[in-house]
Image 1 (tube, rainbow, N blue to C red):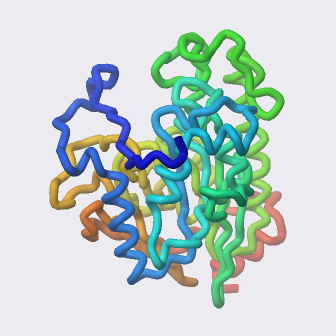
Image 2 (image 1 turned 45 degrees about the vertical axis):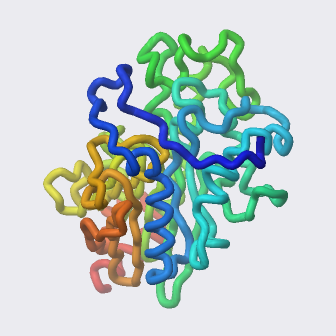
Image 3 (image 1 turned 30 degrees about the vertical axis):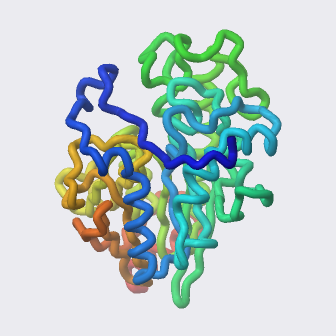
Length: 358
């Protein structure tokens, strides 16, 4: 029931289904990870005074909102109680209350190994005005963009759905496939907004990706902002053959992702950065699911935590903060200017001239 007093408990990813994830359970850390991260965010916010929150998906484990896509919105959504106990009552405090949470969907928001959970309601909650909503959730579409203007500079954020990387043919990878014939019902459908059937599912996600790619390239080519930042769920290790030329051609400065259940910072010139020139950061240790490795009881680890980003016209500083509130690592991002194709827009040409000081 909506008024039942409950605390969020992380999904346990250490089961026999995932032997590579097996590790000891750390009492008082693993069983309260999300609350610890939220508490550390609240403490940090008092000093950093954030303007908004960026959300990289996988909001509800294991299988998204516990309703079926296409369900009646208000009645079905409120009945699960998930919004209240996992979001609205967790991230609170003087300097978090009222901040917009700008985000995307992860594979678990679609259903994990199905595509029929209430992902459409996760989107539509952006317009919810009745309780438990506090009108701060902002995921208005599967892909979308927002320009943030600061004094003297601006940022173009592009929010992307990369769940094509978890949408395989129905008979493949039954435990990690949105389109799985094993876990989806025979008559599964999210038409007309989503896949029409299990058989349509892989091609539907590919069509979404093709459509989104055209939109992204057009948006990056025409961006006049000082910074171009991508926010999505899957790290660029998935599809690196796509991300490498795109980030170089259009001068993408930073990619912010999740999916991997830990915290990572990859500077533009780090040897292990597959993009080599564009920084990317992973914030997958929010505590909704147990972490990749064993966390430390005092928070001296990179398993659970969040990232704090400070922007200026000339640089972006990203700091990794653990569930104990410790600063674990930081990187400084500087602009990556585009390698403009011959057919580039006049806006991109203007960005190139500014880069060369002309």
